[in-house]
Length: 334
Image (cartoon, rainbow, N blue to C red):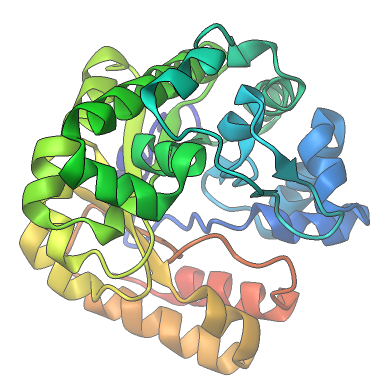
């Protein structure tokens, strides 16, 4: 498929013209059960992570593949205290930035020298060499990285009471992310999804004036890589601003009505989503099949749509439910 499609946008149009939809769930952790490995092993060893993703690809044959979703990579590379459980995703345990001066201790750090960053770059190279489909990567968003540095609630307060400091920490986070994005591009990423869940707490005007320009700059500088945006939660109030940031597409949470969203964003914006990961975890295969079919029907007349999940699937989602998701996607015809 790589010969015909090098981006999710191309992929969406390619399959739409063939009468079906591209199927690209966010589900990397499902591969761990095929290798019998832990989350920590996959996040610290590129060979382990690639084997998990490779066996996941062979089992389900998605139309594109992303590496493991991990919101702690950039934060741990900066030296923030991060807890790494064996069977859970990592979490930042303390927020070390309280004032402008606290940022100075991080300014000289090149995150590309970090071992976990190297794991993801090496995994990406393996994926590009092995998978006959577009391969993608994730980066944290500037708002969420800033929130990990100082705490999301404190960041929101600073955005109002100390706008200069808010601007400073956002610019610092942005430059860290740009450095990582550049290396991901150099190592073969054809699509990069920005993960910025903290953005959901902001209103449209604040989003437009304080956040979206960072996405736009990434799109402009890395104009040969497809940049998409994922913000968790109900982002219906932000859809117009998210589109206006210039990203190629939006990955939407299951809380957003995809059909209504398609009427707001217009036909030039790629939409990705948005089967509920919770329903995938707890519902029966038939219920998953029916939910997937209903979504496909809702999006029947929207060309730039990719069938996916509303967010990353938990590791314990039953394989038969993932089968049902794929089966609905392959049974449906335009």
